[in-house]
Structure formats: structure tokens, C-alpha cells
Image (tube, rainbow, N blue to C red):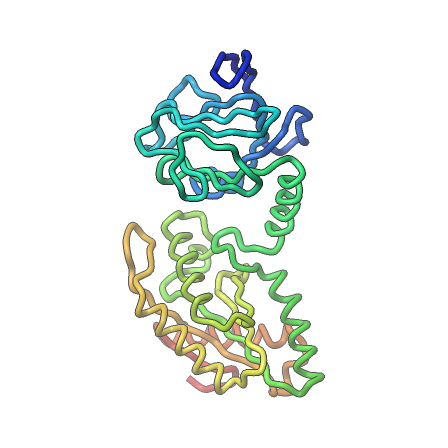
Length: 304
């Protein structure tokens, strides 16, 4: 996209923006990465002068009710890249501070209105960030942002090998939201995705920093805790259940009180010589717990 205009920042400018995908444009001097908003995750190369807003006569249209028709502009100059508010109603922000005009530095977060935030980066910094994005997309669950099953199983295998060598305890918890089917947990519905994401945040806040939390491809959450025996793992699962039940979780158009069921398995049980066997046992326990009824916790081998 390009547009010619004259402005106080110099001679007639040519606005240019390119969404990353088919290669890095040679004209790019910097990048903006959407970090909050409907286009979160996109990275945009910029050069020249760009006008942002919700109207038609802009270089980048932002579909948000708090963004003015002609909200702000960016200008790439020899002295650096500057952002200027164009008299918007809800303001333009740099790192949370409302500004009229400001030069941008690497990693500055630029906000338009109340719900659109972009991160500014020069080309070299942006490329490093893009490589990190590519890596994270391979190890993160797309709905919750937690680690995915592939990453979890690789780490679990390492933790299990360590625990066996050290003759140390290790517990694996599998946790599911009661009332969600496997097809629902696969995602695709915004309210369900929001609910699962918020549950993930609650679980993360309730665990130790060293505990490994992930979302499995079949839908449940999984937690690996070093140096904890299965008997204590049952108490950990109960604490997670209580924390989630006590906090209203966003989803399904409002706040919802939900319950969790959990399965627990771990060392020093001699049957679990591989991560696959340990995970299978924990999932079997979870399956029996969910069939028993909402808010149930069962250990591997435990009778209902």
C-alpha cells in the first residue's frame, strides 16, 4: 500500500507498509508488531510516513471503536522514527504515557485508543523477534499460550530421567474443565477459548515457578512437579481445583464459576519408566475422575 502526502516532517513522503510473510522488503527501516488487538501477532514493515486510523483515507485502518478516523501518524526520518497524535479523542500512548509527538526507541509500545497496542522495533531487532515468534509458535498452544504437548513431553522425559537417576519423587497431574467435550476443547469458539485461556492463567498463578504447565493436544492441562510425591500431588490438584472454583473465569459471554477434575500419577511407582507410560496413567485417572462426576480427583490405580 502506498500514498503520497505532504507534511510538516519534510518533503512529500511515500507511505509504505508491508505485512511480513513473503520476505523482508528492502525499503523497510523499522517494524511494528501488533501485541494487543484483533491483529495480535502480525508484524508490519514500515517506511516513509504512515497514517493510522479507522477511516478510509489512511494507510493502515484499525477496526476499533476507540480509534479516531485519522488517529496518528508515524514518520521515518534520518533522525529516527517519530509518532504524532493527530488530535484523536482517546489519545496516542508510548509505554503507557499519552504523547503528542515522540521519537521511538527499540521495544517501545505504541498504543492507539484503548485496545490497540504495537511494539516498535528497528529492522535487526524485529528479525530477532520474528525468529523468536517462529520458535514460540512451535512450542506454544495457540489457545492458551501455554506450552504445547510436544514441548511438554520432551521436558517430561528429561524430568523423569532425572528423577529415576536421583531416586527422587515426581508427580504428573492432568486437569480438565468439567463440562467441556474434547471437540469443544479443540478451540474455534471465542468464548470457549477465552475460558480455557483464563483457566490456564489461574493454574499458572497457583503453581511454583519451577512446575511445568502445558495444554495437551487432546484438551486437558498437564502439570509436572519435581520433588513431589503422588500423595502430595493429590493436595496440589485439590488446591488448583479450589483456586479455579473460587475465581470467576471469563468466557461464554460473562463470568462463569467452573469446576475441574484431575488425574494424578507419579514416582516412585516403578511402573512408570517412560514419560508415555506416566502420561497414559495420569490420563486414565483423569478419565475415571470425569466419569465419576464433576470436581473429582483420582490417582493412578486408585479405586473410585
